[in-house]
Amino acid sequence: MDVTEIEGLVEGLRNGELNEVHVKKEDFLSFRSVLVKQKDFKHFRGIAAQGGHALYHYMDTARS
Image (cartoon, rainbow, N blue to C red; front, side, top):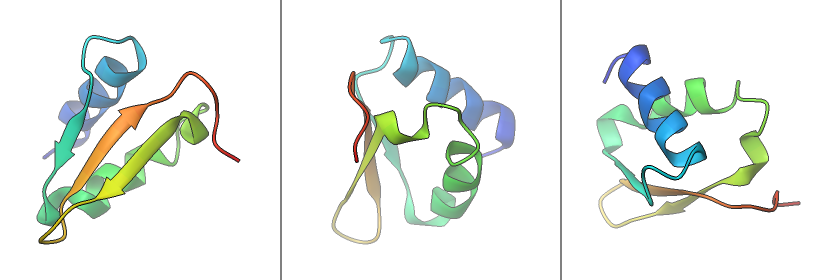
C-alpha cells in the first residue's frame, strides 16, 4: 500500500464514503504512519483482528 492509496482510504473513512477499512499486517506500519499525521487522528478507531490485521472506523466524537 502506498501513501496515496492510504490517504484515499483515510479520506474515505473521514467523509463517510467507507464504513471501515481492513488493514493487512504487512501494511499496518505504513497505514499508521500516515494516520497519526492527521489533524483528526483521535476520531479514528483501530481494532486488532486475528492474524495481526486491523479494522479501522471513523467516529464522530474523538476518543480520549
